[in-house]
Image 1 (tube, helix red, strand yellow):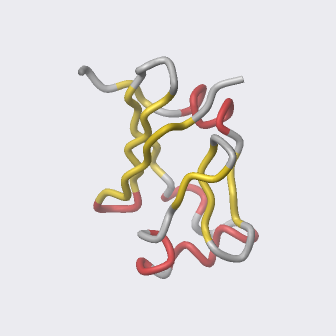
Image 2: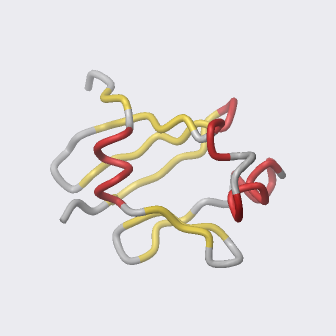
Length: 79
C-alpha cells in the first residue's frame, strides 16, 4: 500500500502529492467537485485545508481519498 508523506494544495483545485517511494504527482480534483461529499471542496478554504491522515489525504467532515487510487490516477511530475 502506498502512503502519502506530503501534500500541498495548489491553484485551480490541484494537489501536489509526495509518496513514500519518492514519487511526486499532481492530482486534478476538479472532476470530483460536483460529486457527493466532494462538493464541499468547492469552498477553496476547505480545499486548501487538506491534511495527511493515516498515510492518505483528508479534509474536515471525514472527506478522504485512497492513497493507492491517488497514486494510480495522478500525473507524475519530474523531480
